[in-house]
Image 1 (cartoon, helix red, strand yellow):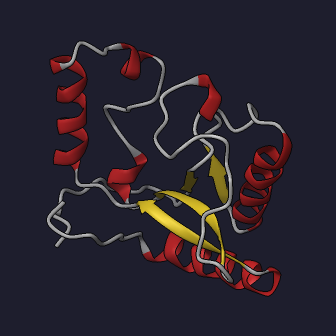
Image 2 (cartoon, one colour):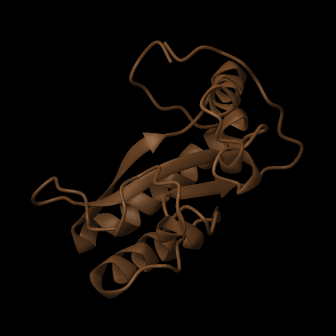
Length: 151
């Protein structure tokens, strides 16, 4: 990444705009952590798992050697309170590589907030990756991977 910017394919971006429009009257918005990821970034993450001797992250599905992020169809995000600008409590930080980050593995307010995010995203056609409460994908026919730097 050469800039702090997030991109999605038009279809996914349009659906995300509908999610935000739906959440706004309830006082919520979304904060995007990651979206389109160049293929070279995914390959660098895979290389990193090898350098730090963490093949379990690949085997357990926390890092993918082929990512929907490379298609511009995956997004990592959370809910935020529009009045305060603070992220809602989700029980784990973004990119936690453990079972605690699985969407269903939360209790109390964190479980409520995860389900609020999941329901809002699913209403607009996104699908949650159940091992990461923050990760959602949007489906389009015959997507192509691409490797454009984020500038």
